[in-house]
Image (cartoon, rainbow, N blue to C red):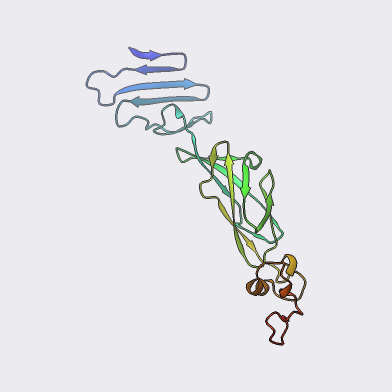
Amino acid sequence: MPASESASYRLLQASAGCPAGGGVRVGGTGIELDGSTGDAVAGVPGGESAGGVRVIPNFTGQLYDPRELEVSAVPAVVDEGGTRQMQAELVMDDESVLPVLADGVAWSEGSMALDGISVGGLVTAATVYQDETAVVNGSWQDVADPDGFELTVLNTGTDDFEGYAGDGLDDDWQVGYFGLPPNADAAPDVDADFDGQDNR
């Protein structure tokens, strides 16, 4: 005798002493699943039906929730002044992943190495004086990336950094000696330490 049934399922009660417990048959458009309940083999059936409906082992009713968001970019580098498209996917609590449209993610970053990120996840790199690592974060509804994604901004020019650009001196040398611009002492013709030699 069925313990419970409806138009879409029938739950059978096991007979006394049956090691496999009860059973269930779930049917609908594109899927039919026979499974056992109440014992160690419960939830074992798995696979994909002819209709394309996924059957996940050990998840009663095939319910799953997003656990975290993972953001990424390929490749994980971008030239200074260039752009890189970010992407995201949801990691579910059954370890499966689902892609998320970039414009459905709330993107964020807080690095001086980036000029910003668009609603659609397009990162624009700033001009840098050395290779820099920037962290890009994202969230989808209330699910976030716990660590963010490290994007490396490559320094492709040696004399193009902000107020030190185009003066004939290497930017990394100027920043190393004089700090970030502006600093008048970093100008090429200045003898900041009064040793008779300018910065050239």
